Length: 171
Image 1: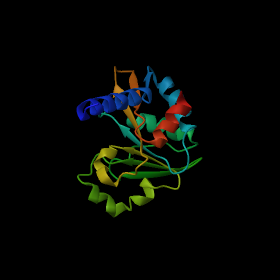
Image 2 (image 1 turned 45 degrees about the horizontal axis):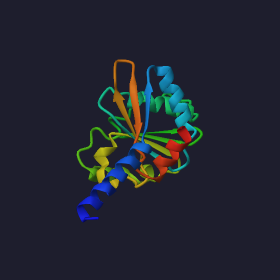
Image 3 (image 1 turned 180 degrees about the horizontal axis):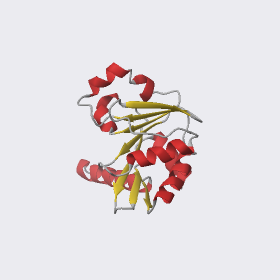
Image 4 (image 1 turned 90 degrees about the vertical axis):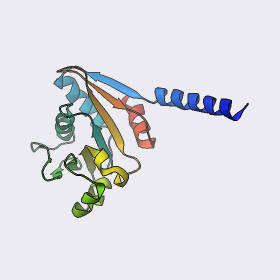
């Protein structure tokens, strides 16, 4: 085999692995979103950090509210857009972060980000990509794609060991 052919085969195998480990779920209503968040909540463990990726209005905060409720949070979960993080207690300590307004990862040093990125509990982060290199290695990324006014597609790509464990539990 030439190096070029070897690289092509290696890349093809990588794409096949990615396709097999990808989880896509279509949710057609708020009830289905709540039901999925309930199933997803049962896969979580202490120390998990979840990144919710999606456009404005995709449903990141709505999903977070359902997830919090399914983790035993009795309070109303609100978006922490202006104060970066809201803290709740339930089955786990539940940290809800919204990094939409930060311009650089260095801004997170002011709030002791390690407490949230390596939590004693669970952290959900909206707009986590703004934290860039500070994010933990086993970040659980859920992409939320708006298909229509009431329908969303949830994608978990299986980028790391923790995502693969969750995909296996959800299938």
